[in-house]
Image (cartoon, rainbow, N blue to C red; front, side, top):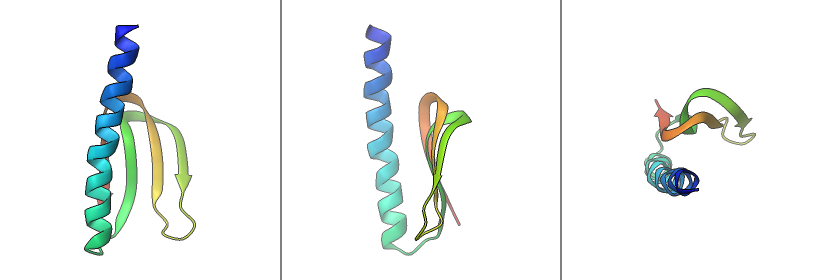
Length: 69
Protein backbone atom coordinates (compact mmCIF):
# COMPACT_ATOMS: atom_id res chain seq x y z
CA UNK A 1 0.00 0.00 0.00
CA UNK A 2 2.89 2.37 0.73
CA UNK A 3 4.21 1.96 -2.81
CA UNK A 4 0.82 2.94 -4.25
CA UNK A 5 0.73 6.09 -2.09
CA UNK A 6 4.29 6.92 -3.13
CA UNK A 7 3.40 6.62 -6.83
CA UNK A 8 0.25 8.76 -6.41
CA UNK A 9 2.06 11.49 -4.47
CA UNK A 10 5.04 11.52 -6.84
CA UNK A 11 2.67 11.63 -9.82
CA UNK A 12 0.86 14.63 -8.34
CA UNK A 13 4.11 16.49 -7.70
CA UNK A 14 5.35 15.77 -11.23
CA UNK A 15 2.02 16.88 -12.72
CA UNK A 16 2.11 20.22 -10.89
CA UNK A 17 5.78 20.78 -11.76
CA UNK A 18 5.38 20.02 -15.47
CA UNK A 19 2.16 22.03 -15.64
CA UNK A 20 4.22 25.03 -14.48
CA UNK A 21 6.55 24.58 -17.46
CA UNK A 22 3.51 24.22 -19.71
CA UNK A 23 1.82 27.41 -18.46
CA UNK A 24 4.98 29.53 -18.75
CA UNK A 25 5.69 28.23 -22.26
CA UNK A 26 2.15 29.13 -23.31
CA UNK A 27 2.47 32.55 -21.66
CA UNK A 28 5.64 33.33 -23.62
CA UNK A 29 4.17 31.86 -26.83
CA UNK A 30 6.66 28.99 -27.13
CA UNK A 31 5.25 26.19 -29.30
CA UNK A 32 4.62 22.98 -27.34
CA UNK A 33 4.75 19.64 -29.12
CA UNK A 34 4.03 17.30 -26.22
CA UNK A 35 2.97 17.30 -22.56
CA UNK A 36 3.72 13.97 -20.92
CA UNK A 37 3.38 12.51 -17.44
CA UNK A 38 5.58 9.47 -16.87
CA UNK A 39 8.42 8.00 -18.91
CA UNK A 40 8.75 5.03 -21.23
CA UNK A 41 6.11 3.53 -23.53
CA UNK A 42 2.82 5.34 -24.16
CA UNK A 43 -0.29 4.16 -22.32
CA UNK A 44 -2.68 6.85 -23.54
CA UNK A 45 -2.41 9.81 -25.88
CA UNK A 46 -4.75 12.64 -26.84
CA UNK A 47 -4.12 15.29 -29.49
CA UNK A 48 -5.58 18.71 -28.76
CA UNK A 49 -7.87 19.90 -31.56
CA UNK A 50 -7.22 23.60 -31.08
CA UNK A 51 -3.50 23.67 -30.27
CA UNK A 52 -2.21 20.38 -31.78
CA UNK A 53 -0.41 19.40 -28.55
CA UNK A 54 -0.05 15.69 -27.78
CA UNK A 55 -1.10 15.00 -24.17
CA UNK A 56 0.37 11.67 -23.01
CA UNK A 57 0.35 9.28 -20.07
CA UNK A 58 3.33 6.95 -20.07
CA UNK A 59 4.03 3.64 -18.32
CA UNK A 60 6.74 4.47 -15.75
CA UNK A 61 5.50 7.08 -13.23
CA UNK A 62 8.88 8.58 -12.32
CA UNK A 63 8.79 11.91 -14.11
CA UNK A 64 7.39 13.83 -17.02
CA UNK A 65 8.27 16.39 -19.63
CA UNK A 66 7.05 19.20 -21.84
CA UNK A 67 8.54 19.08 -25.32
CA UNK A 68 8.92 22.62 -26.67
CA UNK A 69 10.24 24.21 -29.85
